Structures are given as structure tokens and as C-alpha cells.
Image (cartoon, rainbow, N blue to C red; front, top):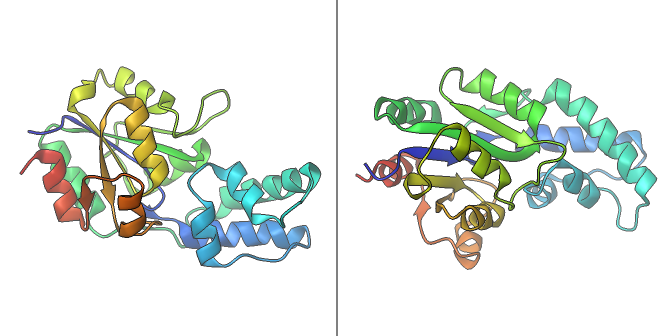
Length: 217
């Protein structure tokens, strides 16, 4: 077996959350009389936490008061609507079950707000994830290694036998900072070419190849 612990990003890696993120961003923008954003714009804005998502979504040059107002509206709306259109990428649950049958521990580390990470993991992957951590006050978000290190500690995991799996440059940097291997998936919010240019050296184009990369088959 190649790895004994597999740590996954959430948005763009195990769940397609883009439509719900876009809808909540645009709800919050509209409430503050700001222009809406397209799906492609929101796709580019995600990855560094929800505050930076909103900071990027508001009009350029917006003051702190507006950013904070839109941020508050987004959080309230997303808390109620984070699973309206979100869906599991095909085959993820089956892969999780297969990994667990191999004795591999499964974790999620995301820059999404922790309340949404907990809700979505519980709803879409009940009983399949050993620990899930989102963005929390007082804990540095990715690409800082803090949450990955917390997972490794809580699961008593061997760093050399652990892998971080994500869909972005932030995930590649997170794995490097945590001194764990990285697998980049190409079905998420960033293109294959972008991932390669960002330093990805192991890529998975589908869930089957991801499973094989984790278990070493």
C-alpha cells in the first residue's frame, strides 16, 4: 500500500460546489447594490477562503465596510443554501468506501468555512470521513500546513505515508508546506495546464486513476 492516510480538499476535489457559491456571492452582492459575478469569475476567486472570495467579488476599490457587509450576507445565505445545487463528483463515495476497506484513513482539509465543511461532509459522505476541518478563527488557512498537521496528529498518521489531494495551486503549496506528497485532480476548478505550471507532478484525470495513485496499484 502506498499511503495509509488520504487528506482531501473539498471544493472542486470531492464536491462540485461552484453553483451554490456563485448564487450566495451574487445574493450578497445584490443586497449591497453591487454587480453580480459569473460562474467563471467565482471559479477564479475561490481557493483562499471565503473572505478573500468576497474581497475579490466586490467592485475593485471597495471600502472595508462594504466588504464586511457583503461577507456577512454571504455567510448567512450560504449557511442556508450550501447544498442546493452542490453534488458529489461521480464515484467519490465509492472510492472512499474502497479506500476504507483497504484500511486507509480519510480526512478533509478545506479553506471553506468550517460550518459548511461539517454540514457538507455529513450530508454527502456520512460515516466515510475520519476527520474534517474547515477555516476556523485562530488557525492559519491553506497554504499554511496547520490544519494538515492537526489531522496528522489527531489520526496518529505517518507523514511519509500521507498524501494531500486537491485541485489548485493552493493545494500544491499546502502539501509542500506540510511535507506530504500531493496528487492534483484535473476535474476541479483549475485546468490541467494551470496545475502543471503550478508544480503538480502527479495528476489524476478520473476517480479510478486517483484511487490507483493512493493505493499504489
